[in-house]
Image (cartoon, rainbow over all chains, first blue to last red; front, side):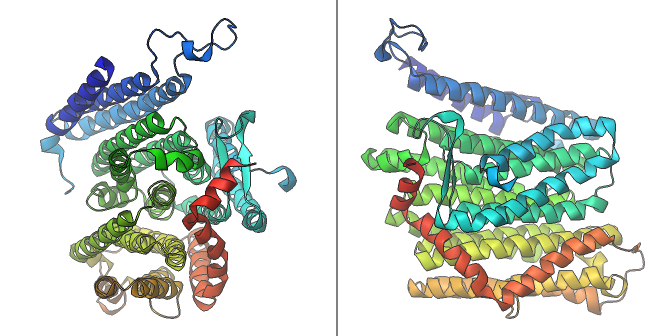
Length: 113
Length: 490
């Protein structure tokens, strides 16, 4: 239960940062916090109390003694994707800073919504 | 070569080529340009040869020997065959156009990202696994963010950052929806989820639906989630604007509709789609009217057309889905033509605003002619393909007895006519803009536009050719049980 509460809390904190903060770097940090929250949520879905890592070659283990391996595989993929997006985002932040000499999003908005 | 070709090659070949491009650039900078062309020409050739096979006998490919529902499958049915052929063909045409248009360094990065984008879009259409769908959406999105900022100017970076911000929200919502679906059904195979979704309680199903609608609605330009689109379209290089309208949005709409039809096919969802479609269409057409930059105008028009497509999907009958797919095809070819023509018009007039296009019809007769042809086709005038798809959509809407929607579609067509003809009249009937710096349009650009113009006219004269192809595609999308049977049993 604690995992679910924490993951939802992380997602909400991240969204708060993205929506309210005016600094570009803080917005990117907010995005990574959202990602972390979702990853935790996925892991929590596959978690089984008192179970161990799903290693099929260990014959003494039965299926109900293992945690669900699928969400873990998903999270590994999602982490890689999140890394890619963060890298692109930071590259764009650097470029925006080069052009505008500021990280404040209020001073950058030239294109209208 | 063709004999051993399986659907996974649609993903593997462009992905491999994309990663080889930087290496090839080290050896010979000039040959990089040809790589995407060869890849896409080959893929579109193969997709046309595979087409008849896929219609009669859908191909389900199991990756790495894990049988469905456990492994990842690729489902190459009539609908996927149609959309993949469309994407590879349009990709090839846009490459042809880029060949002389993208002269700015670093061209190898442009072509690499371009191929990654095509990979992602075909992957979205082929995959039968919902998490795989998410991965391909992200591949497409990351390539699209980078390409938006390709020109390295102020506004490009800003548009790209905005797109990235909204896109990240979209992926968050989609991932949450996938997590919930997995928690409820214990599987990731779309067909397997579809066969188990009825056991899921209704409130949870609706939460999942909302998450998917927000996530995919952002990519598919649904109102009010489409704030990124006008900026990204207008700040990206013109061929990339064409890619967004012709490929990225089409793949996103496909993903959205596939999930709606197999997972959430209850009555009220379809009403919701019709309402969202109408709102999207009306607001977008009104906004397009107010634009004074041509590429922003095209972007809003693109959103409006997506609204029309969603209305047709929302009617939910087989003929209306067929009409929606026809409209998607038409929009793909016509909007790409408009973007490509506008690309050179903007390039030569030196400014993005519509008023600087005055009198270019005399200096640039061929490009202007293509733009005018595209404008008439997208409004839906009779000899062109756009007429038929709009007519079929109106017929199916009228059959569903939604007369108000018919009226609104007609009104938005009139608005469309006003703002497109305004541009066309400026091209032909206004005094020349003295500042225009007119040069000849390169032959590759003209060939690319010429192919599209020929397709528009030919499809306009023989609409039944496309409609026949779309019939099995539409029935595959509407018929949930059929999809489950095809995708699960091998």
